Length: 246
Image (tube, rainbow, N blue to C red; front, side, top):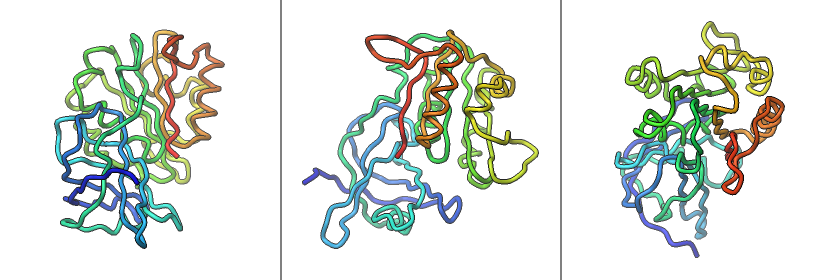
């Protein structure tokens, strides 16, 4: 049986019918930006838990998680229905290696995400470390619809605080827009379109962190390898760090 602590819902923000952000007041152990933690509920007498990345940076409360509702999933729909004041279970400690402490020295940092995979990157971007370590930091976020490009207010605040050092590249795949790139991230990597929009190179002086749809990660990693980059490992430092989001 998992060890849980209790948390209290502070806010439940519905971005769309499918996408939600849950803010929770809970006393977890100190964590590092980019990590995830398990959320859970008692459902039909059983403990049901799933890992969700922390969107808030360390030392900023409440805890925040963004997630999409999975059709017929046992947990996400119930989390989406929670109201302020209701209780949720949390693991007491966060885990995960999608953190800057695992990233070797580089000039440019690319944070490439789809869907709710943007969550851990928003935590990282609201710490001091990326701005102290990298000349240019680019956040890439792909969604099906423009309405699913969540946290635009947070991103605008990051851009205002780090003008000239930060770039934001949105992708929208299922409707035309006048501001986002169309198509898929891997194709934009191969064509050089992503670099042109992001204002930085993707080369041996760069590090790329990938989080989101598993197929995007597979295809983007192939495109990066074709560009001469290699997957990062502790024993063999490289240029690409990945985390599959489901």
